[in-house]
Length: 126
Image 1 (cartoon, helix red, strand yellow):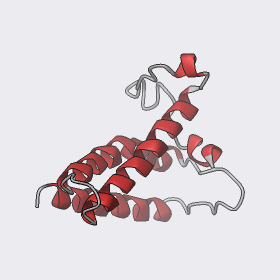
Image 2: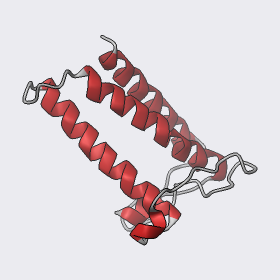
Image 3: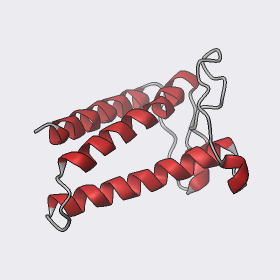
Image 4: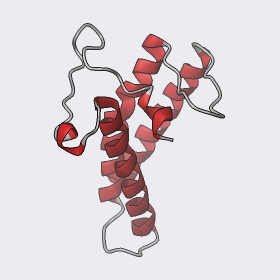
């Protein structure tokens, strides 16, 4: 599953050198740039989603606004991967992964991204 998402992590220097996001500790962990960013974002997604569900079900004392805002920040942080897919026609690579039609499929991804950002913003500041 990791290789599916690694292919859409914008490489350093993308967009004329504007994309230069660090990967602190990647070398110590023995991870390359794409793997590092795939791992941390995946862990944050799972953790944030779990925290959102458990707080919504009142299984934890954390108010739902906290994980909703954290998920808003996460979606904002991974938005460049979706923009990279559009601007560079990058495809998720792996077995059984359908190709995204260019550019129509990317329009759909952009709409979903906006809906997620709106939903998490609304939950965070309700």
